[in-house]
Length: 367
Ligand SMILES: Cc1ncc(C[n+]2csc(CCOP(=O)(O)OP(=O)(O)O)c2C)c(N)n1
Ligand SMILES: [Mg+2]
Image (cartoon, rainbow, N blue to C red; front, side, top):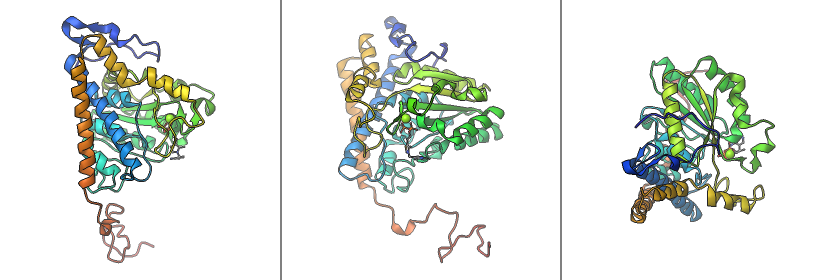
């Protein structure tokens, strides 16, 4: 796929990707019809998967915390799909769709939400701790900002081993007020690490608007460390994809750490325990975003306007997304609960028959 030629643009100032249509060549914004359908299929899978998780939670199949990504799918597809298979992704707890985008099968993600053996973390992590290093997905972290120093560490490891991968480290807007963010950005800049810090800026940390906890705009947060800042409209998957495609290549080529303010919006409550709008945002605000800022609707309409998507094709793509989500839930349902006798597996390196740690693998006194 061609590299991005456009410089990143401020949210709201981007030319509509539809301006770049080329019906004769069956292309839009440089994407082929097949690629466009692929992005639509990805986002529809993420949406249907999350709706299925929502349903499963409501009937008690999923317990614990559960944060849906509904409304933010443009970022899962747009920021992760342009990456190489061996690039690394680390993120916070709103990560089901990001895990799927990086290559964890929907079955393994759903089974993890159900806490079953077939889950990607063996049923021990749940919604907030999806993990599979074989596809370069390093979690799934529940401590706000906890993944940021780990992301810097992953990028450091890439450099240390002489690789040319990049690490994409996602976080929510609330995470930029954590001390770990500041320390990590500083060290990343000093060492010029191959890391892209991406703020999924949905405007709120739980029920607190970003404007209430910051007197400065998001874009200036990396300036003190000399890290270039970019703003991208995360609801426009084509713009987002092209932007990340170009940025990842620049970082791979030695451009050093980058900071991306990705504008998005969450269409559900903070977690499954919260009402959709709550008292911190009005129903009208949510409705306006649902109507005008749905990344799936935006792409669908753009493709239909450009003559690159027929109604029957849309229905076929959506039916496949629903079927994959159903299949994931069926798989999760059929997968067994972890055996209680394995409770301490993977917690420490080794445990002796008395439940004591072998810190060095041999036992003995460690004071
Ligand atoms: C260190 C820490 N403090 C507080 C919490 C409780 N908490 C969970 S999510 C959250 C808000 C995070 O918002 P944001 O980073 O914007 O992510 P979003 O939920 O919008 O995706 C808070 C305060 C936590 N998990 N970790
Ligand atoms: Mg937020």
